[in-house]
Length: 228
Image (tube, helix red, strand yellow):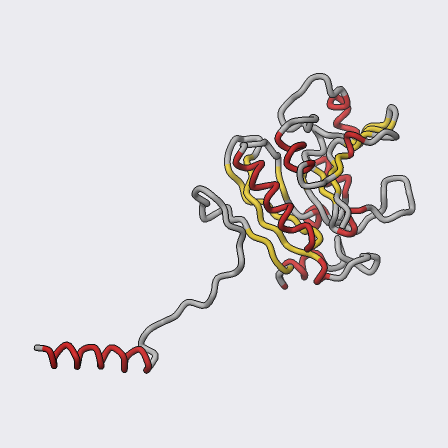
């Protein structure tokens, strides 16, 4: 009986050496998260995949882009939409901020902070106006600051706009997007609005981000940015 088991063990070893066993390739790096993640919603960040590079080339990433493609990171996040359901979102940010961004949106997800949608601005032809009108949360986009001949920090992947309809950019009596005028009144807090001390504000601020809602010359309530 002993010799039988020895022969069995020897056979198993030969099978393994002959390639009878299949070994899985290492999984892509993902951020560790708590709780169950559905098949439709994952959390990860890393180099911009080739398929995404092709999607953004000539739109958000173009000849005027001040950073290289390998300076950027593709971030997949999960979030709670205005419909109170879990959704998958995607952002492109500077690689030095990818970990920050992943952690921030995971924190907002766990606190069930409502975000209407999170899509690449390229789905709106790179138009900030169309993205805002759709109430889309986005980050990287090569464009100038509204009304100026200066590249926005979004061009470097170091700025994020969240729920732009509920958090407009207000300069005097001018409100952008124009359809968000009702939300220029920050005294009446409604779903999706960012206010000092709330979950969104705290998630960004404790990691060293600047909130446009605290600027003096204008108020960009949707906007967060961080120096690198």
